[in-house]
Amino acid sequence: DDEMIRQNLRFIDVGTSLAYTIDGAAAGDEWGEILVAFNAGPGPQVLRFPPGRWTMVVKDKTAGTKTLRKLSGLYRMAPYSMTVFYK
Image (cartoon, rainbow, N blue to C red):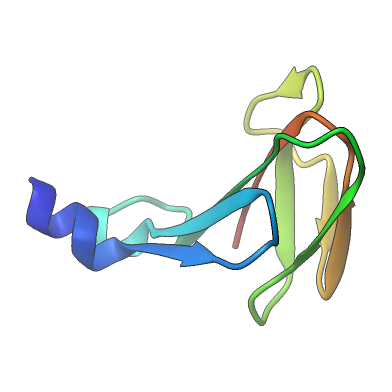
């Protein structure tokens, strides 16, 4: 329901782009926390991860549940891109 979404969705400040986390554990998902980031601009954008080690599963034209990379700290998003991570 909409109340559950409000409680489990958190936006992250990434300048002119959009990024948010979803509390997957609250919905019973095996991915405890999910991070979705969009860079709608013509230049690269830096995403500062919330604490922890994140697993990338979506990048550019590759999407699925297979691990593409594991990251923490900062990630440079390509122009006009969308990326999904979980931990």
